[in-house]
Image: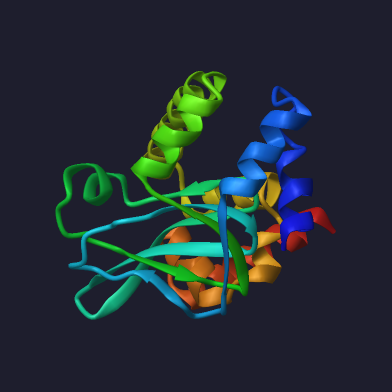
Amino acid sequence: MENEFRAFISNFPFLNSDEAEIIVENTILREFNKGYILLKEGRISKECYAVVRGCIREFYIKDGLEKTTAFFMEGQSVNSFSSYTNQVPSKHFLECSEDCLLTVGNQSLVDQMCERIPRLTEFIKNEVEKDAGELQERMASFMTSSPEERFTDLMENNPSLMNRVPQHQIASYLGVTPESLSRIKKRAYQKKA
């Protein structure tokens, strides 16, 4: 796991080798099995994660049905920000869609790392702003696009997701039924032929 995490850390070239080693030595890594629930609706989030390997799904339960709202994969941070920051019960679930290797942290660990590596503060700020911008764009795109356009966007920007999670979760994420997703896929593949 540690070597896998070292390879992950190498994706952050602004860190020198001593700083990368401080992070490797102080980061908690945990493996989680597919299906493991990291956070349940109604619980207060106490931890934040980064995906080294695997896929995490965020979903809500509405009228007894799961509504998938996000997937987080390698290199992405995962957190229930409103619950974690405000210490209020989460309104959603976080579930491992695959076997995962995650960093597990909390504010105390983040503060310690930023104290030892001051440049991390700016990096974390930039990452949070980037994530917030991507979320804003994703929400706007979802609200203004058709299901076919959402599918096309997914295929252009994250095609591997189609093979990593069940199709009913993809359908939920796109805001359609599994049957509608099948028709959308059929039409999209016919256009390519």
